[in-house]
Length: 126
Image: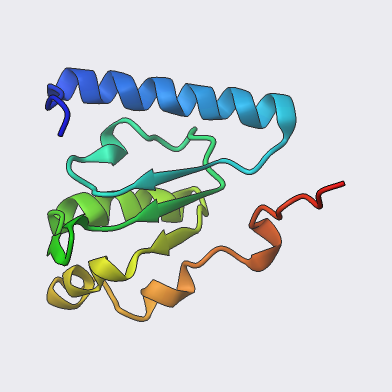
């Protein structure tokens, strides 16, 4: 297990990551995505409406067969931001209990899947 980052370090790391994804998207036109797994702090505080994401993955923290759910408000803030930017969200199955316990809407677990046309395709080998 690595060293725990301070909040200031977490914010700086997310800003750098989003900037790198923005550059990749601008230079290559590739689909860019981020895994927010686990949602251990309020990512919406840094990942604003100008984010370059084409889709995002969210889930609970896990250790073998144990799952640790994020705080519902953190997920709610992130989902509101993704709704504002029309960014599809892929939910890991391990986050379903959080949705059921906090009225986040289980039907949304499927509604937010990215359309197949936006998923990257493996290139054919020559």
